[in-house]
Figure: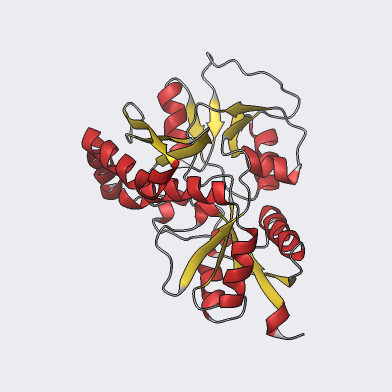
Amino acid sequence: MTRSNRLRIGTRHSALAIYQAKAVQEALQQINIDTEIIEITSDGDVDLVTPLYEMGIQGIFTKTLDVALLESRIDLAVHSTKDVPTRQAKGLTLSATLPRATPFDCLVLPKGQSVLDFSATNIIATSSLRRKLQWLNRYPEHQTESLRGNIQTRLSKLDSSGWQGAIFAQAALERLRVTSNAFITLDWMLPSPAQGAIGIVCRENDSFALEACRAINHQETEICISIERDFLAVLHGGCSVPIAAYAFMEGDDIRFHGNIMSLDAKQKCEVQLSFARDEAQHAGQLAAKKILSQGAEVMIKTFKRS
């Protein structure tokens, strides 16, 4: 089959990544584009011990697929959009997003438990510094433990650990349907920018792939996550800086919430703004400038020195 009627979709080999690649594949099939899925192991899948924020680089889950794109071994790379760096490798572009699932995190309880005594001295597991600090800011008497691995591995560790809960992206659990564990939606916890959205990266000079991606792009999701990613980009935050952001449509307006926590989890810098849709292009930048004026710059420098 010739290149003109087939797109090679690159993905990590985790169950969630393959689910997302298949979602893109199905969307492309709806517009009569033939595809094949190619699995590639990323550095983020190899090191399952070091907390993500200690790896100190952006694109830990994306750079292997970036190389495959640039070498033309694949035509599209499918990611959780929150993992895609705001500054793309030269020649690559985030070309489309599918409709966003829930952006929120959730607290998963050990198997057989349905309630949590929040007033107790609980141990909560997460490898995300953003989740850890927001949790400890709200529940300073609790403790946290690092938890890495794919979703099934993390769920297994939770059930055997003696921990009282672990924090997951709710969209991932709902997509995979891999657990009967009870969970609590943490709608008070601001998510990572672009969390819950499936993103597609391709080469800037691949007109066929770009055209196909634009045909399946979900515009409302694109607008909201672009604002969140612009907010992150202006703040120069990577996985080592706990920046949270959430933009959503409400009638004709866009609501935006963003925050950053101090390293000791005792202080929080936050911003809440509303924009008209025609202001979306600059909304993330304006929100970032506002939070910087409120002291976020000092917090960010603290994390970059640590």
